[in-house]
Image (cartoon, rainbow, N blue to C red; front, side, top):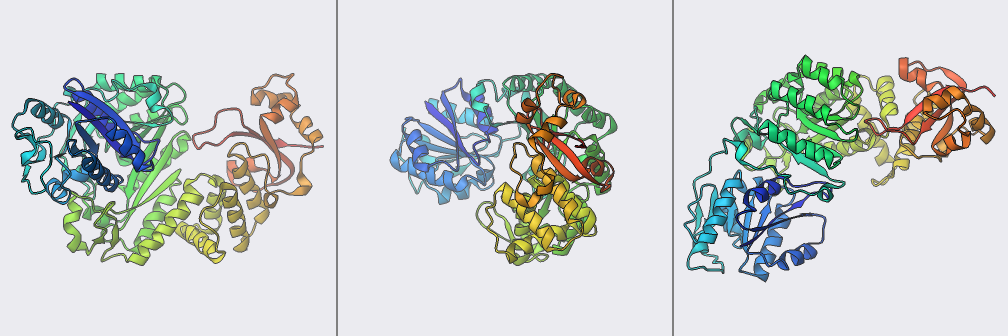
Length: 595
């Protein structure tokens, strides 16, 4: 029996962890293959590749981002070759398997929940022509009788008893046992140390799974060491709460520091208010850029948090986030969800402002989705929810927020992505906040949105164009200290990397460095030492590896104590050869220059 395990990922850099688990679990039972595609690929090409494989079973892993294309592709495969059995699994078909099969007569089997054991038993039953009374399986009654290979639209759909969770995760083999280095090149490697969640947030599917089960530590350590040795750029842990078990987490974090190769990044979803001092100390002493946190705030409205059965303490969370910020070595993403119960537009703005003031590296503004199987879906009438009945099931309105308000927040999400999460304006956006929007940072992004609309500026803007928008916005608002903001904006611009041609609107032509001036500055032996060059290195060699720019103000002094000191002939050298910081910004060195 020849089987293909496959899925359509949302992006090329993503990989599918579930089919890797399934492959390792069943590969000794059948002739098994595994291929990953993306939703952005040509469907005809994917169809051709699958059909040419002459598979007996094609099994798809289904999610909100791929279900529609997966169904279209599955129907086309069945039409081309009715002998091929179509098997679906994953969260998008787990909670209404019978309905999915009724609406799609080309589907032969659906596996609900954890699929390792169910898939193994299904394959074995098909091979041995045995009864299909397999826990966790939904199937068409005629599929295993008299070796029928065609499908019958009127066949009876049988839904078997749900399968209990796998209590002993040690029976599941490592998902990366057979993975080659080339398969993960320039991609994210997903990994889990546990299944389940300690919390029961009603908008999340994890709330339907009770308790947390852990994989054996020796397997975890072995897998992670292998992935690091394969030089993947990022390992993203999919544990719903990475730090749910303090002792295990502390031990694991220490191990991750031990196997650090100087390049790897580990991404966790953590509960910040649960971070204790000994764990924080391990993070404090870690390499810059080694760890990245995703912290779900969702809302700072206590009534909202209680309504969705979420446990959080924003005061303690804030203290932890601020503490980690001072470490200057960890990238923090804080999440908000628009559309939750009891949070109207004005209250959401408060939540946004509360989070913004913590100055995380990213604010991820998401929108509530009423997912199949989530407890909140059953409360649509209670909160007056209207939502899309197709993936991704996003909320359109509720008793607390109108469609126009959610559309407005979509616009704000785009502005936040461009002018905050992009990291293009790390210092300049914070300057705007501290000096002009201290009482209402949300208004800053609203004003940028209004400015873009008034100027009818196209949405698809390049990085350079965004800097010009920011400059024009500041000028249009007639804010004071435009010369200083200009310097700060230029500083942000040059820290991106190889940006030699500073735009005219950011440059003061009277303060250009001549070649002679550059040679003088870069001949300084102390500066050469700071940059890691030998004393006899020629200035031209240093110029080739960086950019020297003159500023009106002492930027170093501002970054240190917020003082705006006008200082003629203040230079900054931006080094393009060394390592960037965890915000992907190049090193810089400043000093005063006298001709």
